[in-house]
Figure 1 (tube, rainbow, N blue to C red):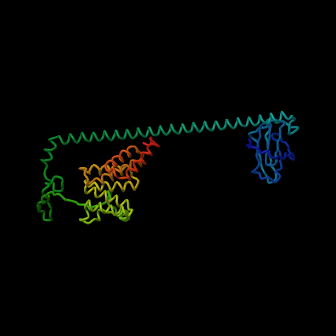
Figure 2: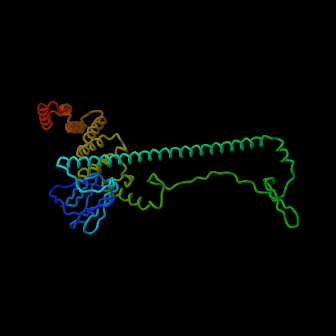
Figure 3: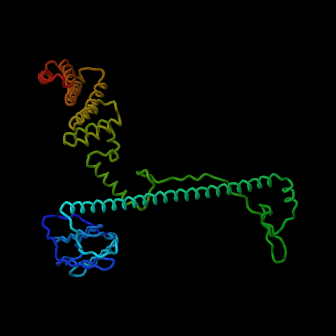
Length: 404
């Protein structure tokens, strides 16, 4: 049976120029290709229908008798297609085509297509079923092989275990048998046997059959060996292959720390003072080096966390860098250290309160910021700038009371 493909019906030329003849058991049809290559020919056959489609030509025959559709043969030459259709019955055909009207031809064609589709579907279903059965067989075979292999391994392990237990039991009986020990002790010394010689002696047999006994020196006393390792920055062991990469990384880190303007390891002894760190941070902050100032204040707090100016000035750096929550924390820490409250630290306390109010405003807590400003105005009632800021904040609060 030949295959079939879809036909584009833009334009079709019906091929009527063909010849046919018959033998005792087959029909022979010659169809000209008209310059079309054989690879572009699509053939479809059924029991009473034959079609050749090679665009733009179409050859269709509604056979007068039935043929063996699965045994047809088509041979191509350069100019024509030679079709051999075995007859279903050995009889002489008077005509190649049967007499059918339009409806009968349409029904015959549709029946042929449906039959071919059904047969093709059945073949595909059989292939799928065979493939499924084959997969199931392969899986079951693999499971069986794995099971046998597992049982074999288990049996081997059990055998080895039994043999080991037997050897262990034999050894236990041997070491507990006192008679065996007495027999070994009673045996004469064999010079050729090194196993029964005393451990403290080595006996050499010379050419003149004389024995020379040499005493083995005693073992040396034990001691403790202290091992020290070179200091390493990296937590992993040193490797020659990664030494170059480590040096490059350390160099980059050192350059980055120098760019910040403050490296604690480079400080001189007289510079390791909290007040010096505070002055260094103020200098860096005035130059706009916020990260360097932050490092200086933080290092000063590591040296001494009792200097409120370090917290206050670091709060200013945090505010400039947009770290408003940390700014509020440092202002609170500075205010806690400014005790007792007196005239000497009044200005510093007002600065911290105002800065904390600014931080609260930037994080959306306007009502709490107003309370802070009221405290600042109360401490310095003649400060017109603080009063103006408080009035502006209250107006903003009236316009948007839900800002908190």
